Image (cartoon, rainbow, N blue to C red; front, top):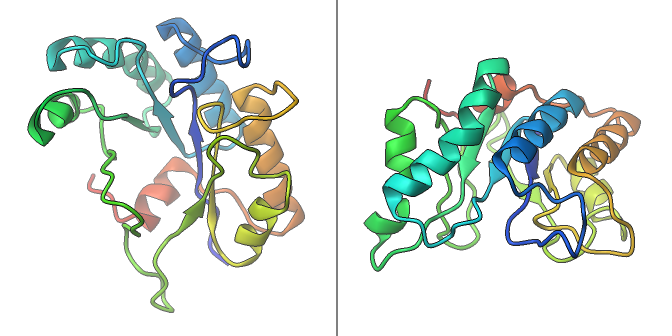
Length: 199
């Protein structure tokens, strides 16, 4: 079975009052991203706190945490969320600027439910599960997806529950489950190949 692509969504709009471990500052985002990559994540997704930032400002804010992460982990796959604006071009302008700076190999697009990436030898496209506003581990969804060849997204952007884990805790929990099921974790390079990302 192919390796598991483990994505971690570090923060989203989740406030620290919901979980004190949610990274908000650039320094916190750098530390969390590096800890999660070390724990087995292949892809890291982040938000900046200034959602209404103009594209130039949004680009600068993302670079504040993308560049230090990539300096330590040049293989990391990092991507931002969409920005604000009246048009798709305005909402995606910071992604174009980040790609031009060489820090972006993967991005976000929300066309609804869709599989993106190359098919495997059996013609199956990569697919992943997450639980937004819940716990992907709690009712066996993560296990069921892994047993069926799927991938996982975890992280404090999505997580809600009685416990207050860190992002690295959630990545480590996913890594343990993958190991228990005999599914190796994809490195960022393996994830890029599975997703057929450009170099």
